[in-house]
Amino acid sequence: MKKSDATHSAEVLSAALGGLDATLPGTRPDLRDETAAFAEHLSPLLSRLPEAAPPEGLFDMIEAEIDGAESAPFQSVRAEEGVWEQRSEKVWKKVLAQETETGRSMYLLRCLPGASIKPHIHERAEHLFILEGELWIDGKLYSAGDAQVAKPGSVHPEIAMPAGCLVLVSA
Image (cartoon, rainbow, N blue to C red; front, side):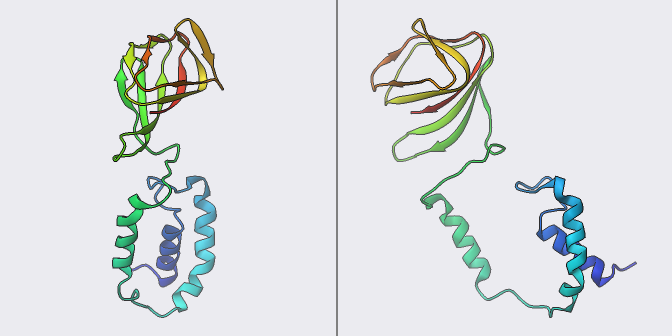
């Protein structure tokens, strides 16, 4: 049984509006019903439009845009994007940005209660900003909203997180 043009048009519009596949990044499953109703409302207009081939070179332009995305002046990572990597039993790391030329990076550390980080030497400056929870460095308590900067060559003593924390690090 063949779908009607109106049904097909509604499905195309709904898919284009991101309402059908909730597994795609950026879709809004909570708007599925509204998207389908909107698409159904517009489908008679879509069925009246003549079929048209994409402009010549469109796909080449899209590929060039995608290839150039890494050299864009801004890089964004959404909260649901990225991968949390387990660094130790109670410490997880999510890289937000990486500069291959300088080796600098910005990342989140999610530390479960009882986590600790062994003493280490800083090759470059490291900036910490505690987003949630608290941590102890060299007998000093740092809580949400506190920051610390470690200079290049400095030695960080053991860092203890008895209650757990979320920390933004730029190093």
